Image (cartoon, rainbow, N blue to C red):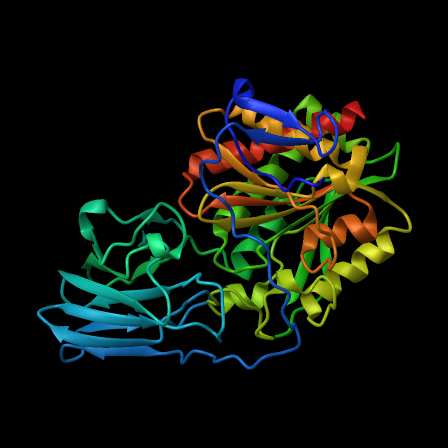
Length: 431
């Protein structure tokens, strides 16, 4: 028989190693089904273009033009503002189109000619208040809003998922003549990501180059980490198919920085492995402040079967070309969701080749026992539809969707990315 497992990893002592039909290190299950249970099976959806609603960009002026709101910057999402009196404002956030995953991104600036405190209530179209607000005075350095200045309205129920989120939220914000940014997560627009790519590419063994254009003609950049003089083994890493999923990007960023550092492990690993990275799969969505989709109105992580969108086609074409030259030994797609979770392909499908993914998950759990990580293994690979299944089916690489929690602490994200990189390097070197 087949067993589809959803598990939570803590310490090694809590693990039970199971397989379908026989004993062995095939899949992993904890004794209790606790923690985040994952999003379930992804529905098959059409990926041909759907219309989107581009937001109006401009400045809203209130209180006899002394208080202002703006969405005139990359990554902004603000669809309407009303003044309610007594320095209270209501803002509305709507999606680029529907139906859509409930990832209600928001980002706006607010300022006033007079220094004062205002209250801003955020309301959403067909959603609830998923993302805890971040505040910045320069648009680059963000920190969570002080909890004493956050009021949940109609709190939700449960621990995970949109029903657990409050219906809306009131924020108390100190404003003055200089803009304050209020955002769902830190701003990592295409320009900010390219700055990081260019900075890391100062290393002699890292190059970056375009692999195609997005729907709105933004360049998709790929990083190639290549000191390989021995074999033609390669890794494929992608991130940000969904614009709001910044925590996944931050873990990916740490993962790549660790592989690129000067440790003996990294230097030895790079002698035998080339790493290809697309850090921003959806530049249009990131710059337009989308909740989920690209400018074709499509969830890119449902388009790895039909390739109707240019962003997925660009990566597919790159892989088809490189597959003639390289043996791809590992692939990872970094995302964000309600809590940390891995989505591997079950070894009842991949056999011995896919076991490295589960060994990797175990090793990360061993080193980071302070936070349990959930695992939902799938034994279905048809249709490919999502990136990890396409990577495995068409390029024979062990692969995984690696998701980080929306509210996972930033220091832990960095540490987890570092540990994940170190452990996959060790495992691949041991093969």
